[in-house]
Image 1 (cartoon, rainbow, N blue to C red):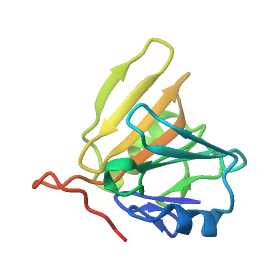
Image 2 (cartoon, rainbow, N blue to C red):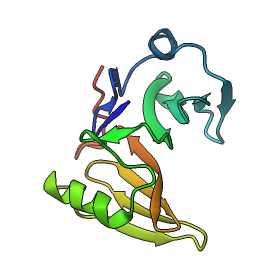
Image 3 (cartoon, rainbow, N blue to C red):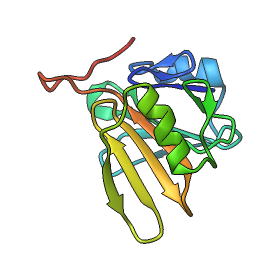
Length: 143
């Protein structure tokens, strides 16, 4: 599966319906709600969690993945050292990250691309991407 910054994952674009996601990926392994009433689908074999925003008609809006098979700009990044991933991102002109330390793990967030790298033991262990919010404070849906 390929992470497509600002767009989604593979052919699933931000704004996709739950029905389209299930038609594409099949039935989820687990469905649950967060504190805001958003619906999350968990796909165990894919190590993938998809969030559908309640306030936006349950459109696909956020993706979390920790699969070793996930690629970003054609390269596998899970399990890679942070330096190597930053080098790849800099080549694609993605370089402005905010750092947060949570003791047992760290995060690096690039808000322009709504890209989050979760780091544990010096390696990327999860990538998150979300739908972009433009300067008019509106979501940039791709579907």
